[in-house]
Length: 156
Image (cartoon, rainbow, N blue to C red; front, side, top):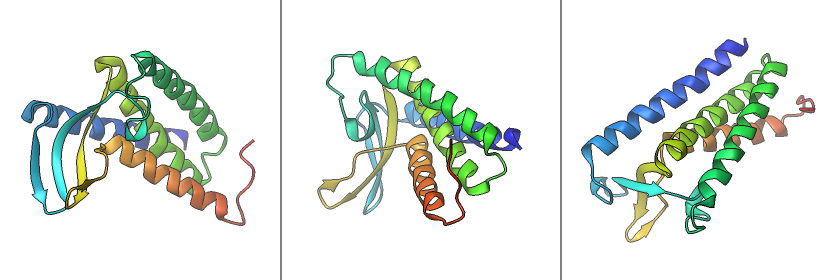
């Protein structure tokens, strides 16, 4: 069962990296293409964490967030091994793991994370994000949902 969840995490990584390769191959940094009235494709580089948190920390954030991703990935893998039969819990962890490793690849390879999905309303923009970020967000929401279920056991 563990192989199934690790396979899902690997699929997230592959989709994330393919999409980032495509965008970097077709856009220059800062270029934007309106797709819908509320959605643009844009090539952005995020040296920080979510919403560019600590983007101006002088470079230490690259290794700080990389270290956090490695530790979290090891812990998530341990949890997946112990709880592989708990479908919603394992699904959420797999999405988070795939997203964390997808962004870790960028941090190690480039020193920043490639973002390209930009939603906005008029001149109000939500920070750009990517498939890895989406997987982490969906995984976190499912993890919260799983935690709210009355049959959920402690995660040790």
